[in-house]
Image (cartoon, rainbow, N blue to C red):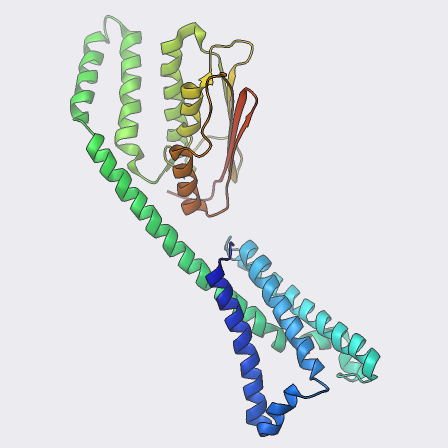
Length: 350
């Protein structure tokens, strides 16, 4: 989780609240004398050690345990992480009080039997939970605020895209009806051309209507890519050199609509696709939990990819809104070659 300046204020505020509450408790139980004692020498080193242990576990929970467990909704691992944090709290306090402080003062805070590992850890669990609870609540608050912000951005992007789509949509029914007429006229006399027209019609219908949804099944997205490549092969005939490969099971896994076509389009728009010695490549690998799309193509000396292009930035924003940081998107230009890698988790259902 990225922490901005304002969020740091919340952390400092919690630290301040914890300290003030402890000082106030001293005032309640021991009056002004107990309160002032905290600022006289020798200092209350035992409390300082507890603060070190508390805020160490606080930081570990906020920056390590919560992001790697709660973000993935793995509550068992979160509970295990809390148990480990309680042990860490106890070890820090033990080192500070029963080893370092004892070395200078000669006094133990716990009697001998209670310094055993299990009892000492259990006895300190109450103190450890304070920092763990505060950091968990603050993490959940930040996650909620971040999710609300992402949802708001998605809604804005969707509304803009919908408006642009409506502006650019020029009688699609007329277009489809015309293509269907051509298909009907040619199906008997020139069936190959008729099938190509039908394939083009299906491709356009998918873009125009079906892919308006945020998520589509992987099988439909793969078919769309293959139809797109097929029509380009018809266009370039024997001068198109492209290695296209899919490994894994293509099923009803849910993926964001019209994301993969971004990488395929870039090859045809900017790449060299007529070099038989260096064919462009599109590799799609599907595992149980992840899909990887990798592309490779040569680029001409006159072509320069714009790494800050609108398409790339829009894609990044969309993926971040959906997956947060649980995805990989890499672009790399080296000499006369351009490669991309996209990895997405397959854990969302339509």
